[in-house]
Length: 273
Ligand SMILES: NC(=O)c1ccc[n+]([C@@H]2O[C@H](COP(=O)([O-])OP(=O)(O)OC[C@H]3O[C@@H](n4cnc5c(N)ncnc54)[C@H](OP(=O)(O)O)[C@@H]3O)[C@@H](O)[C@H]2O)c1
Image (cartoon, rainbow, N blue to C red; front, side, top):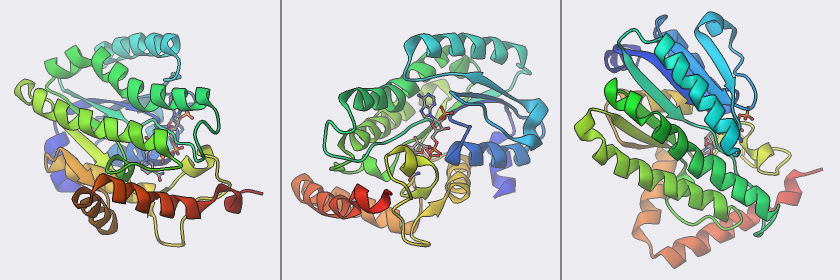
């Protein structure tokens, strides 16, 4: 993996990531950090990205993507950082921040659902739009972390699934639009992954049977492999690929019914105190 990834990443010098403070984002930071000592990292999230092996190559700019003012301030600071660290290489932007919420709409609250749209939808748009000129000038790349929830409606996680469907469609469109500018765009669709995601979504524990999900490290590895191959879409893992393909073949109402049956079984209270 290392060799093929380094070929395409050879000319990257600056990496901007959202949500590098935890889970998949932290795993991506860790793996990218070992690929080249020349990469410089800028993390945008509410808490700092802690990674001792990257200490002098990583800065964290506080950024709440659900807040327009906080995002704008952070992005202006990020732009200054990009100028300061410019060694003539490409910029890689990873839109990874996101969260979900399990329940019957509007639970947990309409505000929380709106905030989800801000972080999962408006967030990637705002960051990518703000850095569009820099990305095109450096012939850089964008990686968007969507989900297998992109492929069908996800009752009890309805808003979340809809945000990820948006992200996947937008990402695939962008991949075509920015091809002429030499900017590669990859959309990544992980299935259930062992991170803080489920706690954030309202569960005490991840509702995963032992070994049924993937680790953040596995998702990060699949992401970097797909990126190195120049792909515009990757679904993480064989089982997720099969489910995503089946979802595409069946009528939307059937898939929604099946998804509702599966999601209902998760029953939040079984995973809470
Ligand atoms: N875990 C899964 O099963 C799974 C499956 C498919 C897709 N995904 C997607 O993978 C991505 C990463 O999630 P994860 O699984 O690694 O979960 P995680 O460990 O909870 O990480 C979520 C990241 O999003 C950031 N974030 C949340 N709210 C934010 C805000 N208002 N402003 C800025 N950043 C914010 C968090 O940083 P701060 O808290 O520091 O702000 C954190 O770094 C998400 O987009 C998620 O939808 C996850």
